[in-house]
Length: 333
Image (cartoon, rainbow, N blue to C red; front, top):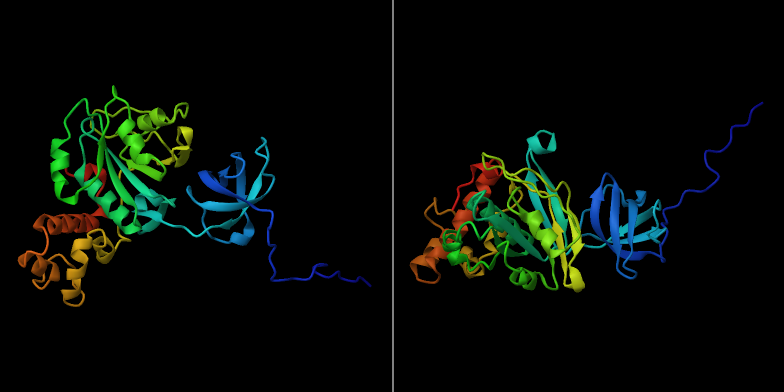
């Protein structure tokens, strides 16, 4: 007679370990299920995996996490991420089926806990793409992140056309030239967590290498048809020298879908127009096509600058078309 052993000698429990010895860190890179983390207390860099108890909760660059296990930072060691702190902001974009390899579209988190979105655009080679800038602005307003326009290759063309296009938005900007220091940009990055985004070939990786010497982010050229090649392949958070702040370099993108952003979320980027939206008819799309939009009434009464409404509707139109457009379809300034 054979006695079948019990399935487990250890009783099941719903109690989870408290991990009172966990240390806090920042996720600075993600690579195939391995997470590179910067520890706030010691400054060490450790490699960690996600604990099973986190379930399907994703971990992205910029996340503040708690880590247990071997946190010495020695080679060939592996720690575990056991908790993810609540995110202060989430920058997202909608990826299409061609990019994701699945049918339809899905939302992709770009970074977490960013405070500023640096929209890098070149003035020449490739020319500025205002449609892409518009969509990045929509994403920044939706995530409640401050936008900053960074214009590169200022030695090849002037910024007047681009700045005039955004004059009514009062959009902060910096102009970068290869032969001049980056003092203006550094001042805007000081004390903040900033994420840099832009087309491939606009000089984003070059900026990162100048801001953080020794980073050696890959730098590529622009092809003859004006399409930049992808030089950065993954997001990477870097600490600026002298602890001035953090920058997150992201891979060059050719599309920035915004199907997840609502018109009301975008409207919050225009506080001078928000109150007038309460006078709109139910289910108003704020485009003015229905003829009964409270925003039009506000402008007619002289309560706001007409250019502000024009800017909002331009961004709204960019949102509606962003899910299918790519950067190659954007108009240039």
